[in-house]
Image (cartoon, rainbow, N blue to C red; front, side, top):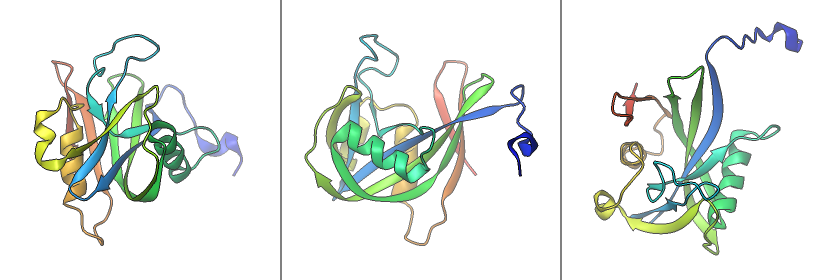
Length: 168
């Protein structure tokens, strides 16, 4: 099928693909304490999130997740696809967030310009300033069994600019 038959219409809702990776080890998860972007403080500066970022042209999701994990933490791992959340930004473009769990961690943990990595015990997550949807997504991942299908969800901003997640 030629590109012209793909029915691409820029007036329709578009998704920007991103990956989000949560490394697990024992009873802890590795999260990044987010740093200012280019010296600019954002709403998420100082909050904790998984490693991740944009899928680049020519990459598949797994390659993007491996690259982002290494760039942001210095680690390599066995990655398992957990699910997808479509983030409705309220704009013409939303975000297709493809979520992975990382196990069998190898490498030397290093900070990056994105953030400072920190192993956080699951029992202490509520004590940390997390990006709004992180606790909900981590809970969903932790409840998954080896034979669980990937989850699907939708995330949106409420009137207070807080991110909410609903799973199908």
